[in-house]
Figure: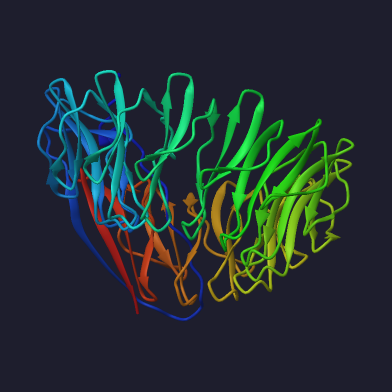
Length: 494
């Protein structure tokens, strides 16, 4: 497969970071130190760059004289003949890394410098949620199999290749994957082959890892299979979901040309169509969109809401007591909050609740301008806006906005300094500080509580985040073109 390599000097690597507020005087103590420096003879393959979840590590593929290697911060791997697509990748806890590498005619998986045996082909590996396990699909000859924790599984004619296959359970104790024999598909769970069907869907684990469900088809009949026990037969089944408390499996089913929701085996009212079930955080409530007589209705806790031309985004409040969803009728959009419709707008966006469930905000378009509506009160109008974000203590709200060709951060209704560009806002854990990256005169800087940092960078590395390690310390990864180096940028707020 042809690869496109691009030098650092010709690539813009921009994204990340956040906003600032507060009137109190403060001091920013900044530190930078080199994390990774590319030697002149190596050429970076920019699309391969990956940032660890904690934004402390950067890994990427490099090429020299038709040989390839992976750089992890300042460490460079052995040379290979190729590096696999979509690798390297980091574990969820940022402590492990894996990538696919080719030597001669064979492909290997490299996991923390441990090189697997050779295969004819390998697929991008998958880490378990606890980061302690690794699984991947491999091929030898005309057989395919899954390798889990370095141990080869049973040979099959085929293993389904998609981002959710193989799939670890949330507690990392189990792994399931979809496999194929001639004209049949089945689920393999912890090495045990399940029943065969003509086709099966990607499996879904419950949050407590005790339940595993998937949709299966035999001929023109569909069933929902839970822990390898098939349920009732239907003409079609489309999508499934499970409640946060793991007690309720819900899926959409069709019978006699009508669709309905099936929850733990109990069938709901019939409609022309139904969408996936959305559960409240405490699992006591459920909502889903239904089509009835060419109108859209939201069914919440088994009760039908009003019929609208369109129904869109839905959110339950964190305490599960409130629910809001967007709708449109006669060309106007509005928010329906606990059954009550808001004022009308040209366009309505996603409802966002504060963590304490006391506040609701959303973006809306009115007369060609965008504004944020908080607790039914309209804010100032802008050319563009981003989604609002509440602080952890729910007392503050911020969003990005474009005005007169410049971008700025709006905090509690107050506009901060305008820049050529800014990122999405992020609050400190104690809600006392905000930080964001701003673009000014071609260079990026970090702003904390409206105070600009001194350091300037060509970019904040794409995929990195500004991470608060505690209430007064934050860091990210930045690009310093002087010497083609990546640096860790740290700030202490005093």
